[in-house]
Image: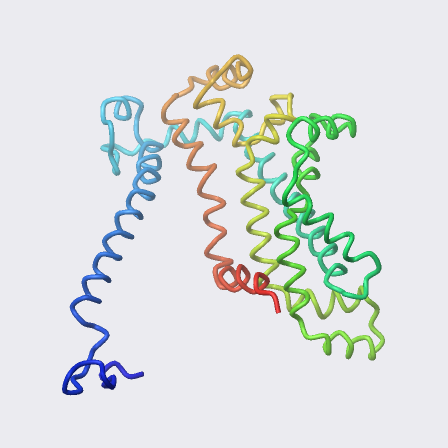
Length: 306
């Protein structure tokens, strides 16, 4: 309907109603104002932390809030990248995130694809087992006992394998696979492709949006995971970045070794906290723009059942 199209019976005399009426403009203005305020509430703390990472210790202590330091100081950044504790935690987090995302996406895809086939023997049983885990969970203590008995304590695999498949993501990916045209797979089989060939050459190229989306979800989950390394990693040399951030912002007796290692370099306390928070936050945020074209489509494409 055109903006200036008259709506029969809308107003006496057939007057034209415009969608850019006064009420709609007020509504749009309130929406813009509210979203702007919410955006500022979200962004301003991040900008303050970023500015604080380039400010001196004296300025951080004397100014309660600022978005631009009086004098840019890079000594904090030089300091944290010169400490083995921080660099080791950063490299550990990057490595666990990359390997964990690859493992989790691979296991999710290879389990979701056969479950999307109605002719799979025992399909209903496996689906019910997956759905059961969405409702009930063994809890923290049984999971820890399983990890311990498998010999994964103090192993990086303890941060990857226990949560290797998210059942909610699995159901969405399965639904997406079910929405793909069966004629494509049948044509590939007629040409002599095996089930693995169909999956690799036909299904995966058509699944780029959902693969990109859930790769991002898995990567964000691993990168931000604090509880798993806290439970399963006792060796401070194997701490991830999130655990190090926590120990630096709220130190306790368990973090004495790492803090001593940092303090031996002079430890600019507040600046280091700000800089590490920036590094723990920004890298995963920078991934979103590269996957944006797949993100919205990938979130919705597998969530609608035929």
